Length: 173
Ligand code: ZN
Image (cartoon, rainbow, N blue to C red; front, side, top):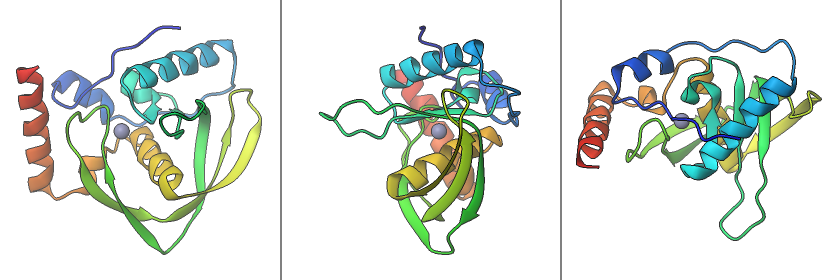
């Protein structure tokens, strides 16, 4: 396993990759599992609760996540070729952050519940309903697969301010 560099929006070359649309993978094989292992290690190291493959520069529809709270056993989850098949009309607003937009947090409103299908770490098909933080996180990560960042849901003014804030934080670091 290896920790990969996380692409961030303050770097224009990184941003150009983050804006691209990822593709489905043909199969869950050992090479893909190695990528998922790297992604999980990178996410834990950051630390974060979710990471899409594009955030480490791989344009494939793969997400890792761990929503276990501090002090709980780690609960890694893997989503390959995820598809949302249903979303609730009811909305839920949550203060989101992103490893590719460090230091910036803002409220985004999304469907409160979604149903999704995906392949797991072993390539087995799964169908599942998500709510609460899981629903927020899976929608945030699936946006990444479409080249969409959470700040794209904000007003243009707030988005520009967010990118300026990331650049300043990076310079100070
Ligand atoms: Zn993100």
